[in-house]
Length: 239
Image (cartoon, rainbow, N blue to C red; front, side, top):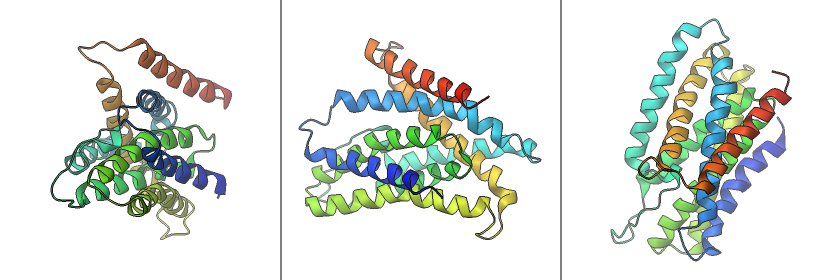
């Protein structure tokens, strides 16, 4: 396992969260552009890499079912996360009650997103996930800050979120090579679930980038840049 991948996943999310102490406004245009870019990049990588790989196995007929399960699972998780994984920031004023639903669903989401990296050999996906976690971590930190949590506690919860994708990567690596339970036969089905989650997240980001079906020039450039970089990586890897 390449340690640098774990570090990229962790520190992008961690620094995305700590940026709340540096940015005065939670309406950062830069984070919105990063979100649009990562959404387009993640969608392109899912279509170009993950879906073909998942359907290449002997259980291809069943993959579509698991993609639907993943899609619906993300719909369910968002009932608790309130769209934080999309960079949404909501104010909570319930007497400093810790947002357990947001934290738990966001951590599960990050854990599942780290799983496809076990079979990702061209490194495109890791950057898409890492970029996607920057605005998600920022939104989580903003919610905790609005609930008047001390900086030390905010850093702790951001670190917990940041470590979940590396853990997902580690667990899926063990599953794919058979060192954890010998569940290689189920790996493509697990990837189907993750593909469904990615499709929901990326398309939601892209649809929410528009108002009255119109996209600003900056966001359009960010989206096209994300797709183009994914295509360059795809053809550059020999496909």
